[in-house]
Every structure is written in structure tokens, then in C-alpha cells.
Length: 431
Image 1: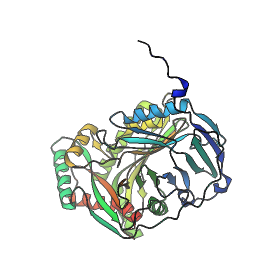
Image 2: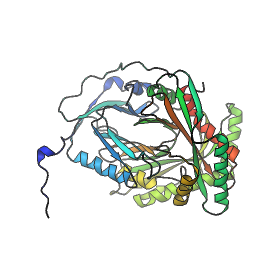
Image 3: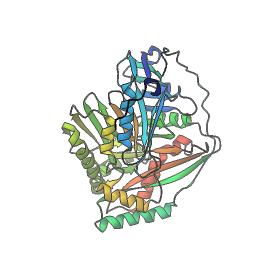
Image 4: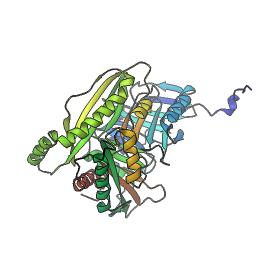
């Protein structure tokens, strides 16, 4: 039985996209230049060291769920683009049609995932700035609104245990160590959550400004209620090249420069942390291999210094084969890495479901953006928090740690507390 094509008037109106230069925003390196443009609620952001993109409004929204959530989102994005009318006068990564996205860590999570195509995108990169309008009309972009409603502070912040107490979570880590020693797996990443309640309704921009200011080497993001500043770039796909920053192996900073230099040396020679890092690097390299004609995988990690912690880090780079140009498809192949799940992946994911007793939601899942050519940047949703859609005073914070046979539950709890520090700071809970 054949099916007739839908009449033209039954199809959704094509998206009309126009990008123009924005000279007044081209100079400067302050992330606040972009973040201050956001509305009080519903803003989208991907900003690092003053460059990046922000957006607001919704020209299109694509919710997805289940094991094929990445592929479904990729298909929907391509379908939107087949009928789009695009006029891009700038021609840089991040111009033209752009979709922001965030996806659940676990394919069983009801959090699923979503692509959001904003009505307005403002971006800056390497001394160039632009504004893109996306809609169903042919109107030219209007003037940039530079004075949205004032940012408000959240007032006092109360932190409470969420899924379990710190003592109970230590027991969870101990059970993870037992499973590893019993030979069920090599590594598992276990996470915990904390609830924050603010006196005043939380203005997400207040938290984003603080994150971008203190953690300027991280990617500050806001997509569909998930906010944070991730130090870990799952991948950047740009003009045939792919880069992934792998972090695994962590030690808390003391605040004393001399002491922290010594701790960096300890981290760089820690057999436990080097083993954890090796698992993470191997998982990313193996996942990228089918998509690349060549790749560079560093033999030795470097120490990445952040205000709260020191990480072992490796930047993996590769040349993409011509047929592999979708950054979202690459994200699907990479997720979940050993840095946020464990090794072997299936065994680690099963143990996480067994031990954590919570739904991670979109914590530790891919978050970022992609353009019409498939290029884009996807981070791992770490150092993050999920806003409560029903209660503007309530925020759920997350942190996780890689557990190996030599792990100490008390040490992992201390590490998780260090990883909660960025979002506690963002809310004003630790100044």
C-alpha cells in the first residue's frame, strides 16, 4: 500500500535563519558580556573565557528518550534543516542554525534528552561576534537588547542530604570496592546528590556568572534547567578534526600554592589515579577509532589545575573520516566514558543502577550544542545542578568519583565534597 506525501500546507513552516555580524560585542573577553544578555529564565549558554554562544526563546524543541535518544535527536535536527532557509553573513562555528542539547546519563532515565533550537543566538569567537535569529518569518534581526531584567541573588542557602547520607554513601563505595575485588569489573564511578534550598527564587544567571568568573577554564553551560561549569569536554568536532579532553584522577587543592605544587606531583605519580586515568583514556580512544583516519593519544597525562581540585588530564585528537561529521553521533559513540561510568561499561552501568539508588537524570550526560554542518561541542554534564521546574527555590547538586580496588570510602567522600564545591559556590553557599 503506497502512501501519498503530505500536502505542503500540512507540513510545519520551514525555519528561516539569518546571522549578522555584531560589531559592538566583538571585542572583550569577559564571559559576562554574553551571559548578561540572558533572560531571567529559559536562557541557554555555552561559554568559556569570554567566547561561546548564548540563546533564548524556542524556534523548535525536540524531546527524545530511550537507548536511541541521540540518533533520534540527530535525525530530527537533519529533518529541520532540510527545509530551513539560511542566510549566514558571518560563517564561523556557531553561526547559522544552532541547537543546544542535554541528554540523560542512563538510557532508562525518564529525563531522556532534548534539543532546543533558540529563537535568538548571540555568539563571540576570536574577535568576531554575531546574532542569529531563527523563526518562521522573514524579518531581519532587530537590535540587541542589552538590558534584560536585573540579576537577583538567591539569599541564604540550606544544603541537605538527598538520596542518602554521607555515611550511607561511604557504604555504597565500600560495596563498589568489594565488587571490583570480586572480579565483577575493573572500575565504577559512583555519584551522590545533595539538595539546596534558596531563600529567594534562584535566578540561574546569578549562578552562571559566578561559575564563569571563578571557573573560567571550564565550559559554563545552561540547557533546559541543567546548569554548571564542566572541566571535561566530551568532544569538539570542527572542520574535520575531533578533540576530547579526558579527566580522571583527582586530588583536592589546599589553597596554599606550594602545598598544591607538591600535591600535583603526588597526583602525577599516584598508581591508583594513573590506573583510573588509563581506563578513561582507553575508553575514549577506542570509541573514537572507528570514526577517525588517524588519532593522537598522549602517553602521559598532564595535571589540570582548577580552583577546587587538581585533575589528571589528556587531550585526545583525531582526523575524522569524511562520512563521520555529526558531533552528536560521536557523542553517542563516546557516552558513557569510563570517566563517568566505569570499565567494562555494561558491568559498571549495572552496578551503578544497583548501588546508587537514584536517577542521575542528565548529570554526567552529554550537554552542549551543534550546528547545521554537524560540527559542535559536547561536554560532560559535571560540576552541575538540576533546577526544579516546579519549585524555583530547589536545586539538586551532583558529584561522582571513580572507584577502584584500592579506593578508600572516606577518601572518595572527601573527593565528592571537593567536586560539589563549584555548585555550592555558584549558589553562594560557600564564599
